[in-house]
Image (cartoon, rainbow, N blue to C red):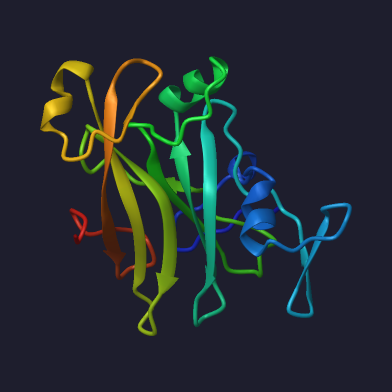
Length: 193
């Protein structure tokens, strides 16, 4: 693999990994050995574009820009989700989850180092992002958020939807949209509700 960059920053080969499921689940069509994908008559090679053993990265989305750049966004979640899994809980709610994205300018052979966007609200985890590229090259990422509060504060939630393994409570907010007009180098300072 050779490093690539979608907006001027170089990536390193040891960071060009992902869960094998990123393209597999996004395209939802694969052959038996999972090394090649068949999509609308094209054969796509299987590449791992991000891997972090200390995180739970999932829910990928992919789009093709007008200039041929492939953009992938996914949910990156750290300690809360990893601890839930360690305790035998598969939990979609994580106050530390963030939106991450990466891109490829060579048809998916190499990928930029994934960027994990900073938190918008410290009580909220950003969830299930998807991405679209507008005709002018503007990137839009939409997602929703889980607000997570201690059990003694659950009354301030609009919809105390669920209790977490640690006793905290959460509810869902959104959808939210963020925008970049410079290929992901910078993003709006806050989400657009």
